[in-house]
Image: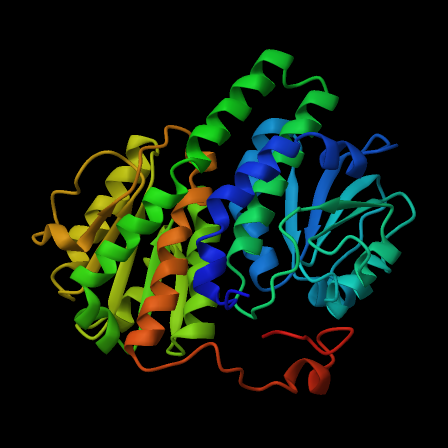
Length: 367
């Protein structure tokens, strides 16, 4: 049996995500069975689950014309004001065993229709929801999710598409066109992985020596920046942060120095946002010589003196779908930077953590 690692799961993403797309809309329709009318959408999740929600929110809102609110389940349960109107609530837990998400789902009003979004259809989360959305990626046996994250983003987007059809917002022809675009995008995953490997090799020394990583994004790409924060913290184990473009300009820019490695996520966006991002990149190049751009557009960013620091990915015209490809470089970098630093992430650490702090309903049997 082939060894299961984060890298092996990354390399399964293209074929498995294409299979998930091929299964549309069967698993989505199962999740939406007997869905009543609802006013808005609430998503509960933590860790990579909330990052997946952030990555899919703009697409969900565009397809459904519904407001999507995303909350950490622990804060929602203990501190948030609970609305008293019909909501569609998505509780995301890839393992289906997140205690905070399960507990929060138990504290919703009776008007809420609850869908458990998970890769384990018979897991604990499904016992407290009305239906289940199986993301169809199967159980990920390593603790640093990659395939499961991208599959969660895709599942949420496809849920949004099907909801749009059910609500009469998306026509049958539009649905078909969206599916064509998803297929074309997913067929670029293997190329994106290869490009990301090459990017790492060209910048290995700079990335290996870093003691602080930051990424800056806007719009749908913010979920990617937050997942970079999660993955780098888990695997490279140095301070890492993903920030909104505007948020970075209000305080965090003051901590920048030449020891930082700063990633800009460059996606198709309206000119005003593009100009602001360009002005910030130009300024920060005076502060650190370790700026990198990961671009989803087919053009070079002129401020970068070294083209090796610009990772140019296959072009995507729909900004809302960009997170499906944009996360792959950070997954690849998590694997290779950790190895370059001498960190063997196949060796588990803190194996008693989830049991000690009761963050999962059972001990995780990762390999």
